Length: 290
Image (tube, rainbow, N blue to C red):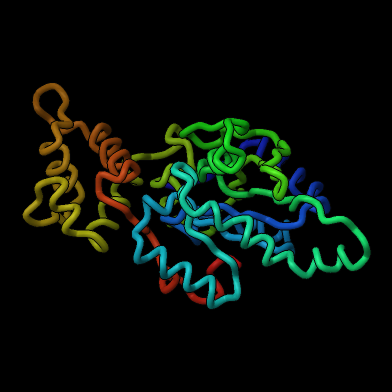
């Protein structure tokens, strides 16, 4: 299965982001804490170039805490500013403005030395679809300004949003990149909900999820589906999961479509507990998006 998803509004968003960049002081790059590397769009690096940036690891409540700390330490070692947040609950958001002020301290000191009155920080929020940008904006603004949804591709236009007196945000649509060089990146994005299910082969996505659990969280997999041992043959594994969870078609046969949907849904909804699908050591140093 080759996973690609690059609707027309994403190409337009790339152009608009480039055009608005000159108005921006700082970038808030929102990534999925479960897949911090795979959810960082390399096109964004090309577009924003050397603008100051705060990396926000969103959905940290859904990620493995120990592995999130690995990522925070990794970014710190690279001289980057990163914060683990949960935009749904508001956790970690109080650190964002302070981190922005720290990164922009020299710029604002130069403005003051020239007699320019300090203004609100102008930030652009960027990230892939369904990573929680609109939810973050609404939390920061403390009202429902940005449209939200639990499917990718809800935001399709840019808008300026004031957050108190210190911050102005520019929301942008989620931008995926036209081609995934590594199809495992596509599978991780699919498994965590960044790509519409309607264009996916959920059998392959669910199998990827099951084999990942077998490798990294085997006891959780066994416990969830009442497995004494994890079958190595794919059909046997689907049979065991489908039978235990009652995913049956007429005649008592296993409904593999229902089984695949169930597995993907349960991984996304934390039925397996908090999961992280990659750590910095999975990548060569030069392979982690900067």
